[in-house]
Length: 622
Image (cartoon, rainbow, N blue to C red; front, side, top):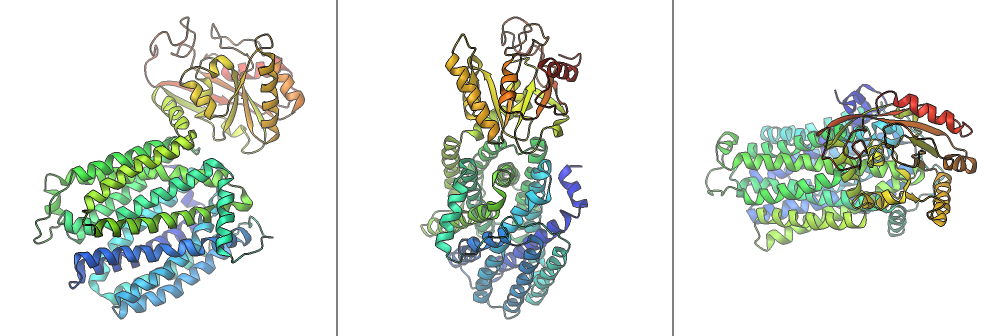
């Protein structure tokens, strides 16, 4: 069972998950009922008017995220989160009373107008929702928690759609009752959320929205990786809103399918998102692995393009059901494209949300998430405008999808160029998961925050990459400058902000500069990793530790965590057969290696004692 599912047994997560699930379900129950009413049941509505109404409805729901997120972020930082969530859920009940009345009176203009108030409630909920997770969960649970939230959100979308399609068939009064009851259930679930301390209780609330937007963007931009992760999330929602908004008319007018075919394809997309989210947790190994983001973005482009090249032509006659649709030659490929778009989206979005939560300052976390919501809103509104303009120009929905897939390739390449850490992490992830299988133990001995020095035996040229791909926290490696300068590895080490070092006889200035950088990193609360032997082993046995480690600890007496790598001796990147990398994969693909961490030792521990501790951790397996 995935660790994320086990979180449902805990009181610190389950009530929040149920509250979030009920809210997402209700949003989509209401919106899908309205969309279905417009696209399938309003006989007097033409395709052009249907396209316009669907996109206007989407824009009205999204607009409050831009207008009210600045206030929502401040509220989520200032006040206790469980109390704030309960009040937001009470607001949802009031809004659903209006929505229920609109359904009873069968007023499409009123139904569309209520979407604005629903968007307001969702905008208030967004910052507290995502800023709650890092407080309620352990660091190793953060990816799993986000995976469950994304899985729950899209399953709620799916269930809301299915229930809406069938309930609205019973009558408008039935769906009016359903949205009201669901809002009440969401409030009931929120009463079980445990209290969580506010991040900034002394914050003065400002209602100057333009000024607050600028301030939030400045806070988000203080960390470049966080800011471009926000851009990446916003772009994902541009893509997601475009697909979800255009899917009903794509099914009806391009594929010739009925409401059940629409349900089928949205179910596949939602299940794909859930599968991608859980796959992300599995592949991440309880750490925030942003190396999966480029893989997800590649899938969004490839399967989006394939969706354009694989489409049926509606005959313009009677709409077909799921059985007739699946009997057509092109249908299986369409379904695969939709599912893989969902899986790619899960791989793409979960690490980005977790990264923002992990690297945002506690006092400003909700406001940074609010800044994310503002940009999300801009991109979502842009998606609605994009749909209106492109479709009004006579472009078909498949061509609209193609343009978007090609735009995705350009946008993500631009982001990855600005923040090469994503590509660097992908290369590390591919190495650790294609050439090696890493068994990890004792990694909880590495502190989740604060400075520390990691020491490890040095067996191969990829030791640093194996460590970087296995540990949750970013690491500053100190490494011999000639390894730092190796082709391909140089890109990874420079992007990881590694510290090159040379011997005193080779380049004394570089050596002194390296010690200064190590000291600065430790004083900023970072983790520094050193291979104290100073060189790769020539025979598989450990070399004596160099005195440079003592010099570092004398200047900055921080905890020292011993590590040991097992099983890399004899690999392609070791010197077991003379020069490293001279025999192609001598142990074959997917070699199993081990990384073991011991308990931290004090900075005044002698070099001999530290070396003995690493040797004990390594054991007989080199």
